[in-house]
Structure formats: C-alpha cells, structure tokens
Length: 275
Image (cartoon, rainbow, N blue to C red; front, side, top):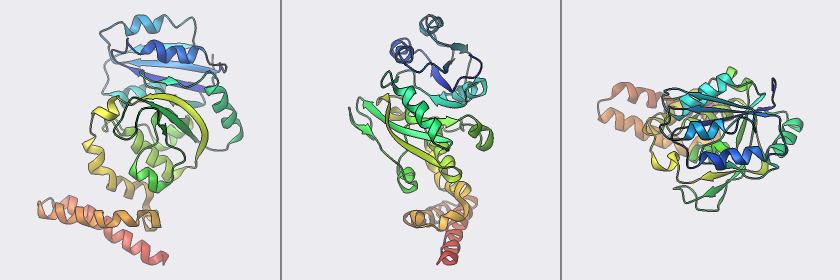
C-alpha cells in the first residue's frame, strides 16, 4: 500500500502478552486503508515472532533496534510512515470496535483540521481515571493544562510533524502532553464523539513520574502561547509562576528565577494591554 490514509505506530518492548489483542483489533477493521509500523526496542521475549505472524493479515513493518524510550520509538515510526494521518497505539491497548477506523476516516473527510481526537475506554484503574471510565470528552485549553488528552484517542495529520516538530524524547511519559499543548497553541483540534480505543490504565503513564515535564511546563506554556498568556485561561497560573520565581531566587538559582519572573511580568503586561 503506497499511500494509506492512516499510519498506525506501535512501540513495543517485551510485549508478547498483549500484542496479539492489539493487532487483532486492527485485523478486524472494516476500513483497510492503513499501514502498521511496529517499532521495537530489542525485545527479549516472543514479541517479534508474534508480530511477524501478522504480516499476511496486515500491511505491517517490523523494526527493532535500541531506542531512547517510547517517544524516541514513536518518532522513528513517524519518520518511516507513509500515511496522510498518524495514530499511536500502545502495545497493551486496542482499537475499541471493528468500525473505529471507518468512523475516523469519515470525520477526516469532512473536517478541515490537523488534529482529531475522541474518547478512550479505560481498562483497569489509573491515577487519573477508574476502570471502565470513558475519558474524557472535549478539551479546552484550561482543561488541557490540568490533564492530557489520551494519546490513544488522537489522530494527527502527517504534515503537522514537519511543521511543529516531533515528540520530545526528553519527556519519558508526558511527551504526548507536551506535543498536544503545541498543537493547541497553533492548530485547531477537533473533538469527535467516538470511543477510539481501550486504554490500559496500568501502563507507563501511571507508573512513572515525568519530573522534567513538570519542571518545564510553565516555561513551555510561555514558549508555545506567547501573547496568549494574557488570556483569561492563564489567570489561575500566574501566581504559581510568581511563587516559582521566588522559590528559585531563594534557592540561589538565579537564572531560573529570572526566567519565571520574566514570564510573570510579561503576563501582567499583556493583561494590561488587553484590558
């Protein structure tokens, strides 16, 4: 398949206990104009054998080499992709129904946007959702600052990555959150009322903390949104920014203190201009 509509990227590492369910959910799709790119981090179990067994059922690439985490693997998959749209599916997740991709393809055909997202059904308890929860409807910017859209609910137009860059592999768990903030800053993101995937609530996003992302969130908001810092949705965060500036100064981290204080002053200036 030379020009599929959708490239589905699946990062794997020792995924033999879950990959069959994941790939089976792709085999049964009524819409067939998609490719599957499995990017493996040198698994030591039977992952390769199981994945290769699906090559007669799916348009599927197998790639296995050392990587620098999940998002490094996802980036490699994006660079190999040929589809007009990109979707990332965890090896322990699955498409929700046989009609899922057909429904998404219909939305793609009638919406002039570069990001389309729906819901996921949570399987198992996560820190941010419970088993069987439907997560989590349409997002505003204010809501996105508080929590992320689930990666397994999102479809990205392939050209988007050429314009705003790939996922930042420095953020081991929250790179998709960082990327979605970039999308909201520069693009129209369309919610569709479709349950896209079953999402494993006990995966890496539940187990690990992304300290780098937490530490840099406010600076990234400044970089991504610029003059929009004067908008109402940022009001509740400006005092936190000022507090961080004071804390950094007290810890003698003067460069960080100046950065946060600059954001604080910029916000107030923009707010005054917008008044």
